[in-house]
Image (cartoon, rainbow over all chains, first blue to last red):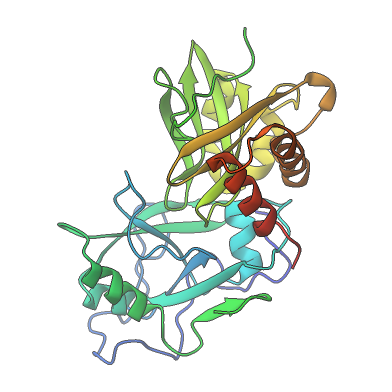
Length: 156
Length: 155
């Protein structure tokens, strides 16, 4: 698998982190589980990365979910997965991060694609029912914890 | 074999005409950003070249065989190099679209241009040049061209 040079060791699996968005205790996650695809199941502490500059907080028209990728991925990693090897960084490019537990507590359902595409593991943030402004607010909240944003040259 | 996809103004990039069918999504980020559509008995690989996390996007389309489609389905983890293997740079159609308006602008690149569907810089350069020459001032297409210029300004 070809990944950028600054790829971290947890690139595929999704790195757990000391920082947490939710203070609710994690239960029943003592050891990594694997699903039938061979990929490790997500835990509440796992980070998810969303690519900007347009950070969608609701599905696009005609779509049913908001996209994130497993792991606390760098901007370079995200641009490789989604934009290809020829995609150079641009002024407005950015990524932001949220944790699985925070999104689950906010009422979202996380559906994994359970396959690697360009080394990235896509997760769909979905809702049962209508996506309201309140849901968008909750989603933004989960992506707003300290240290949850990386931009190259632009401002938040 | 016609070789170039037909694009309709206002169509969704991953369903670029009324008779086109999305048959495979290979990469998704809030919308299908790499996939295959079927139109007029041909398969066309499409790719969002720029704007995959924005409201204005650049798209590229090239014909592939059914065998290539099967190969791409099985090699998603190395999708970029797999695309490089199954495309021949000979017939490329590029387009500019927005979330709001769908496809606004499209052009076929002739064979002698030899531009790969993976060549972001060349595709954007052709589209900006074409857009600056062809679009009407004050039109939605012109606004999208200006937006693309802003998006692709260097870091």
